[in-house]
Structures are given as structure tokens and as C-alpha cells.
Image (spheres, rainbow, N blue to C red):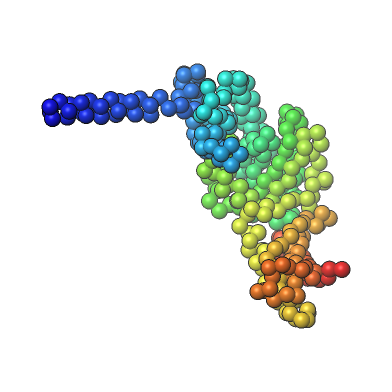
Length: 314
């Protein structure tokens, strides 16, 4: 009897193992769905959750998917593992990848023009639907102005550019040398490579319905506050504000742990760091009454404080 019971238990364990293995094997996946619907055509490159906070589910995802025949043709596909056909039944995959292929061809065409203009170090990609030209270099104001004229000349040789919003990104060279002169696919900006955005120091964006004229954009570069340099500049300005306040404001003030940042529209190389302050002691700041702001004017190119002013609250 004991022997038969052991056989029954072993049999049940085998059935349970087979069931679990089959269940795991049959679990839906985007790669599996693509292989079924488009055999041999696509490869999933990267996947992340897309509904953890909005839909409270780890099964709502998005993936970067490339054509196997040309891995530079990439698109971002959102899907839901809880739904039939991953909620992709009504998605026109062919249309999405037809557009992605056109984007790739346009990028290649513009890269060719840049090389013919002697700008072989410039890189190009499509980011959020914009034609994104990436210049990996440290660039002061004069060099940035020269870039604008070079970009205008390149665009004038490529009429197809009118269909895109256009952006120019200047990126810090550290660790980026291998990307010079490259076609930058979607994967360059998303997935594991999101940190690349932090390498951007300056950017500007021209909408598709506005002709690009270099003279319109001189001095209009926007500084990227996600770049690590922003934290360095912020600390430099905060220290300057504290030292200035110690000498010029009585009684002693306390800087509130907040900051407002903006670039001066008429001179974008200059920025304002505005630090609110209070007369209260630091340990009394559960409820904070702002007494005013210490505004530090900072030159982003020279990396130095230009002027400090105080504006007292009414």
C-alpha cells in the first residue's frame, strides 16, 4: 500500500511539473506574438513596464522592436500581456514600420549631406518625431553660432527636412566619441541608454513650419538642467548667495531648500538662480514665511557668478 501511495505521489508531482512547465512556456510575450504573426521579421531589443503607476500592473509594457533585416529600423510598441493579442490586434504594425523605415532613410540622406558639407562628426537620429542633429563637442558661444550657420547650409541642400521639427543637441564628449558621425537609432535615447540625455549640454528646437534661419537662433540655446553640470552650478550659486547674505543682510537669514532657475531670454548664456529665504531659524521652518529671494546671475559659459541681487517680499 505504501508503495502504491508513493507511485501516486510521484505521478502527481510529474503532472504538476508538466503543467507548470507548459504554463510557463505558454505565457504570452511580445516576441512570441511577433514570431507568430510576422515569422522571422522582428527582434525585441528592450522591454520595460509601462503601467506600474497608471494601470497598477507589471503586465502593461513597452518594447523597442527592430526589423531583423535592418536593425536600425526601430519602433516603440506598447502592449498589455493581460489582453488578447496583447492589445495589438488593431495596431497596424506594417504602417508603423513603414514610417520607421522612412525615418531611417531620411536620417541616412541627411547624414550624407552633412558629410558632403565637411560635417562628418555630426550624428543624426529621430527623437520623439523630431529630426535630431547631435554634435558631440564642448562648444562656447562663438562655436555654437557657427554650428547654426552650418546647420542652415546643410538643411538648404535637403528639401525633405521641411517635414520635421528640427532640434540640435550639443553633447559632452565624455564617453561619447564612438557615436560621432553615426545614425542614432531609437535605442540610443530609450531603454538602458536614457542616461545619454544627461550628456546634452545645450539644445534648441525649430518647428517644422518655421524656416530655419541661423540668425534667428543665435543666443537661444537652452541649457539642459538634467546635465550633471547643473548641480555643480547650483551649488556654486547657492554658496555665493549664502556668503553674500552673510555680509549684506541683517539679521541673519536662512536659505530655504528650494531654487528657481531660468535663462535670460535676451542673453541665454546668462541664467538666474533664485533662492527664497526666511528670517526664521532653520529649526523653526515647519511653516515657512518667505522674506524674499536672493537672485544669482550666472554665466553658463564662463561658469562664474556675474551679479547678486536681493528682492524682498512685500
